[in-house]
Image (tube, rainbow, N blue to C red):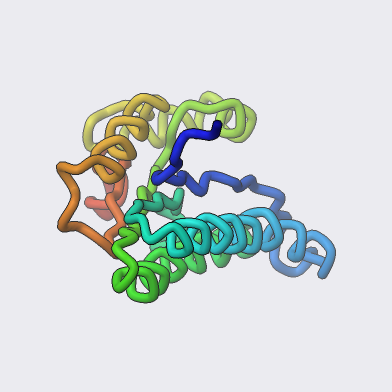
Length: 176
């Protein structure tokens, strides 16, 4: 017997970018296939099962602050994360009549194996000055936000993106 699943986290995604003028169709498609297409069709399969069973549920997408603000040499990733922001909102509208809530989190710089490979010591210090709370986030920071949005405490919230970035996107310049 399978337990009834009523929560989904769409967390597929990665970063494969090269500078815009060097981006090829295959690299672009790789980014969109993982970051957008995979999330879209997993959410669709999940929602179809809930609707067929006449059960409510909740979906959480993993967006990114890159879905709101561009970063150098990150055109395909940034565009894909902008698509996930819109996917979150459009699914919230489409699935609300079926009692399925859809929200997202938009992490900023979080300590992960992916970010460890991208940040040299100079970049790390730069971002620590730019982030208002003074440090990169940890995966647990995202987990708490995700748990909230998937919980009954957020039962009247849908179509929203919760930014989890320590204040990175609030200030233009950061600390000197």
